[in-house]
Length: 455
Ligand code: BES
Ligand code: ZN
Ligand code: ZN
Image 1 (spheres, rainbow, N blue to C red):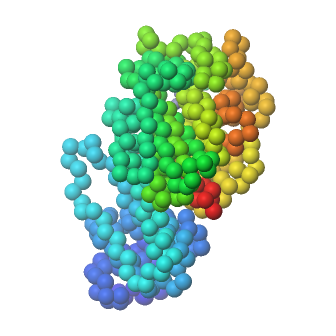
Image 2 (cartoon, protein in one colour):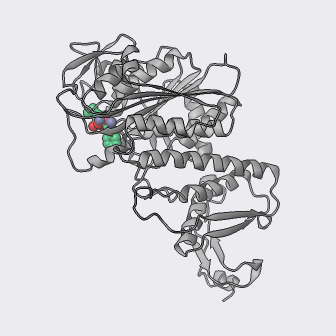
Image 3 (tube, helix red, strand yellow):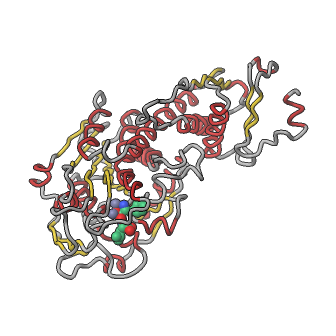
C-alpha cells in the first residue's frame, strides 16, 4: 500500500510521538525505508520535536535500522529551535550505559545524515544541539557509574580527563588541603568513609578576568548510606545517584566550554561518601564551617547541606555575579513535585525571571518554591548556631534551602535547585531519557542561563 493510502485509511494519524515505519518502501523520496512521525497538536513546541526525535530513533533502532537521512529540503521554513530539539532528542535517546557489561552492545553506531540546504542558523543549531546532548550524556554517565567505580577521587580524575585539552582548568583539593582550608562540613561527612573526599573546582575564563564569574555548585555524594542515621536497605543502591548535582555542574561547564561562551565560569563540587563507621560523625556532633558558623549534626543523613554549605562559602569568596547550586538534596521535594519538575529556591525576582526563561528555552521543567524567615527560624541550633534538621515537621526542602542560605554571603544572587526527583528514573515521562538511569537534568537549563548572561 502506498503511504498516502495508509494515511487516508488512518493507519497513521500523526498523533504526538506516533511513528509509522515502512520497511522496503521503494517509492517516493528515493529511500529504501520510510518513517513517518507525528507531532499531533504540538508542532510549535521545541520540546515536542525533541521527543519526536527520540521516538523516531527508538523506532528505527527497534527495527535494527542504524542509519537515517533527514532531508531539510522537505521542511519549508523549519524553525531553528525545532531542528535543534529534534537533533537533541536523537542524541539524547542514543545514550546507553553498557561499559560494565562483559559483552558490550554489538549494534553499529547510529548515523543521522542531514542533507538539503543547511541555512546558517540551522547549521548553528546543529552544532549547539551536538554540544548540549554530548554534555548531558557526560553527566548521565557519571550518574550511572556505581560508587565503587566512581569514588570521590575518581570523580576528580574524570573531571581532569574531561577538561584535559580544553581552555578550562581543574583544581583538586585532597583531604590535607580540605582540612587546611577548614571545610568543616565536608570533613564531617567524609569522616566515616574509607575513601578520601575531594573538593573539585573547574575554572573557565571566556572573557576578561575581571568580569565576575557565574559559579555553579554541585552536591557530589558518590554514595549516601545515611551514615550513622543509616537509610533502610530497600532502594539504597539508588544513592549512587547522590552525585547527580556534581554531574550536572560538570556537564553544564563542559557545554559552556565546548560552545566557547564569552563568560567566566567556576564549577565547585564537594565530593565524598557518607558512611557509618567507628570514625563517622555521630548525631549531636558539632563542627565549625569555613565561614565560622557552628553546626549541630542531629541527623547524619542530612549530609548534602553540610557539603554544599562549604562549597557556597567558597563560591561567595569568588565575588560572583550569581551562584546556582544543584543537588539531590531532599526526599521531600519528591513528595512535593514527583519526577516531573525540579524545585528551585531563590529570593531574587530577577534571577527567577532568568531561570524561567532559561528553562523555557531548554525544555526542562522547573518550579519555584517558597523560602522565608520561618524556614530559617526552623534551622536554629540548640547547642550550636545551626541545626542540620528542622525543628518543625513539613517543608523539608525549604528548610534545607534555608540552611544553605546561611552559607551564601548576603546580597549575592543565589538559587538552589533540588533535583532529588528528576535526576534519575524519569524515562516514564521523557522518552529521550532511560527508564532507570541518570537523566542529566539541569545541564540544558544551566547552559541556557549561561547564554543569557552573555547576551
Ligand atoms: N540524598 C538524600 C536525599 C534523597 C532522598 C535524594 C531520596 C533522592 C531520593 C539526602 O541526603 C537525605 O537523605 N535527606 C534526608 C534529609 C532528612 C534527614 C532531613 C531526607 O530527605 O530524608
Ligand atoms: Zn542523606
Ligand atoms: Zn544525600
